Image (tube, rainbow, N blue to C red):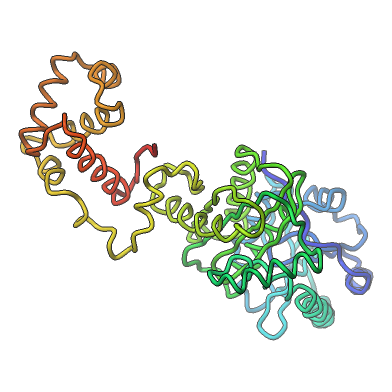
Length: 418
């Protein structure tokens, strides 16, 4: 079952009137969507409704599958109007789609249902004239919204600034204005996207759309700040955040971005540690950046990294990219990995299990499903190849740390934090 994504916003009376006027002129159903194909407003029916339109009208929501299908047609990059093919399996009739742009901004998509793709020249000319007026109205409302939100957009960045002076000023603003609750618990999530083929501005719109619904939840109030390729969600609450709720929230954010953006965007999310109020929110932000890096480097996290689950990786991931390379691997471990006869991988697996089980021979043998005699033989081989003593805590630390670094360098990033 596909997820239903929230509507963009309720269309203004002015937009609704312009849409209705065009529909009456054409005697066809007209829909206005935002750049992410989320419902803004619609005309009345003209006996050309399909299941997709009916659901949108009744619920004000769009299926993620429908959104992805329409965006996959490249509508956000269209230079001129065109037809979107229908999909019987999705309950979607063909639509004539007009990208609405003003001063370089993609403001929305004007859709006219046309089951037979038979719009006349006069009808497309009328749509073009109406589209100009609708785009101008949307741009006017967009500018007004930006002016209202400019202060709210800057506040989270100030709270998360490395400068104590900037943070104190932002905290005082919260106390003076009450724009955010002065709650005792704070957590920050960071979302990052890779280089995408989406047009300028589309990524920012998608990030805001994916995060906005979590500014106010059952357990927290907060703020969202967005850049061209990343975003932060600051959440403040009276009670400590539930880790499971945070993970579910993160999963939904990533899934929404998968719907709104192409696969090249590959969004990842990092959850910072739970901190004490807005004064320590910047700490959670710095931790969230590290957790996002873990999510990018270690696919087994499934694109959501959580600071409090990183263990020793939290330290290693603060090394700069240029330093995090194979040169950090200890020489004894490199010798083991290069062991002749193809046994390097088997001995690496044995060493990993031995260290993870705190040097316990019984538990390691059980985990590897081998006899203790075989395990002792492998451990002797490891000691001979590496020249290290597995009874030495310092030597075990060298090897364990080397395996952790190797996990960050491998394509699958597979390792267990702890």
